[in-house]
Length: 88
Image (tube, rainbow, N blue to C red; front, side, top):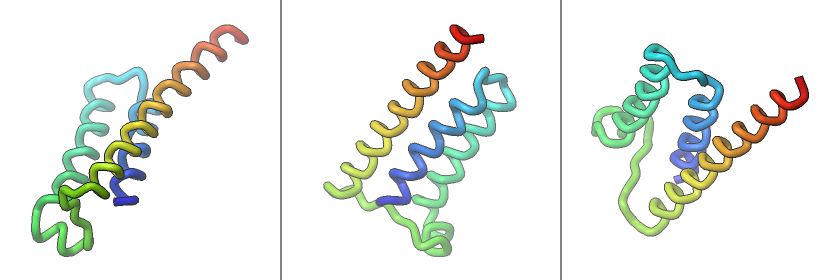
């Protein structure tokens, strides 16, 4: 579950770093999400990487914390962008 939390935060860091999103950058971000979902839910990949996300309370908390972390990354990214524009 820590892997899922870290992935969600890392995905939002990738999305913020890729701004402004054009088609190629959006495809990279979405591709990362699709590949990670495949690793979690395709049995061969899930077994190879020893990753699974059973839907229980622990997984729900991991996803929730990852989403909160992702929102924090986006908010801080926007604050930093505004600060840079104001001081340039």
